Length: 211
Image 1 (cartoon, rainbow, N blue to C red):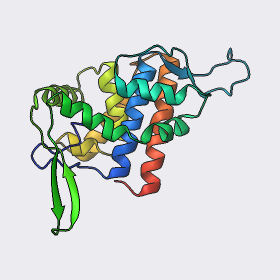
Image 2: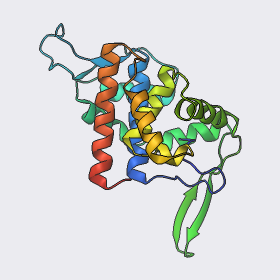
Image 3: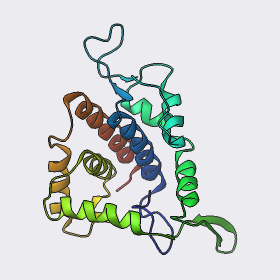
Image 4: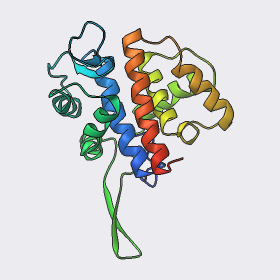
């Protein structure tokens, strides 16, 4: 969320559909990377292979992730459906967390003096700066990506926003992001789930006309 908010204006640099689905995808990938959710395999009887299952419903300690986990507990779902289930309310919850942590503030204004609008300028950019530096190291300097950064690259690629977050040649960034996303940063089951989340998120952005 911090990456897609302009620090000064507090407005997102991507469209709202892409933003909401990227955040939903991020929640899902956190649950996958933590081992709480994974795709069904041949040993999961009566469940279509590839459907996402909740393997561990214990609390994560993060309100957004715990809420997401509760939404996925009822039955196995496709990655596309999982993202859809996680969209509603996630942006508001994430913005609330960031505000509580003192990283952003909420400002209200009116467009043309009539239409209400909110923005979220940065108050503390240290955490965001560390993430940006790690992204730059991986995408611009070719350094090895850890699972967290790899997952982030997968999401940014899905919403076609890598070039909006990292400054550089658009074609080169796209190629490097693809290389990272296809790299050996996770086991087969996790990679399969992440690929499904990428496809689900990218499909929504394409349908919505996001760029």
